[in-house]
Image 1: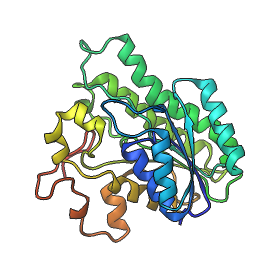
Image 2: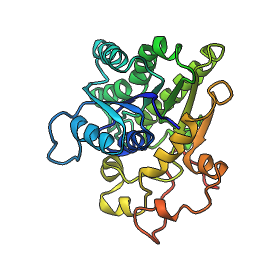
Image 3: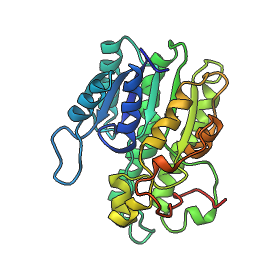
Image 4: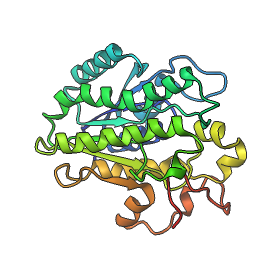
Length: 274
């Protein structure tokens, strides 16, 4: 289990990040809720404080930290604060993400920079800040919520700026896995086979109808749990889909993960038809 282990999770105030935090809390883990939302948002549920309360209610220990992952200095400070508070960091999860599915003519420099700062750049900087603490952990993991490195033209043509930023996270995962292999720090990427019912999917894929054709964030949380409980020295450099991870763990019935029973699921971006 993740009992007693410390997780630093970006973007953990809602969505997949929160689901992973709650699953870890159920084990009795120490969870750092590192996210930007401190005060309630009029259109988005969850703050770092509500997430921390929810983790505590599950049996975990939570530390809410306000963090804008675009700020390199703030990242260093947050990681240091978290490590001092819990006595170290065992797991780094790069979940924070910005999305805009526009093509080249639709995405200006401001939106382009935002996605790259929050996605690839932050994944690199947060991981980098955690490494000095991870290296002292008995089973250290870095987990990127980013797609398999399947560089098909069709993954890029409709939304090149977003694709660049997400595949950038995956390239960071690939590099870190090899760089720190001998040190025993695992780095893997996890991606949903279908869309997940989050605010980001509602925004990017077309409202409530998109949610009905998605799965609950719990499927990613359960898959992440399997990865993070694995042996870091034997499980690294992998690009994983949530379905495959859970099937390998013996899960056969995925109906409970559906947001709306009986709906046809939507394949997520960057996932080829099977």
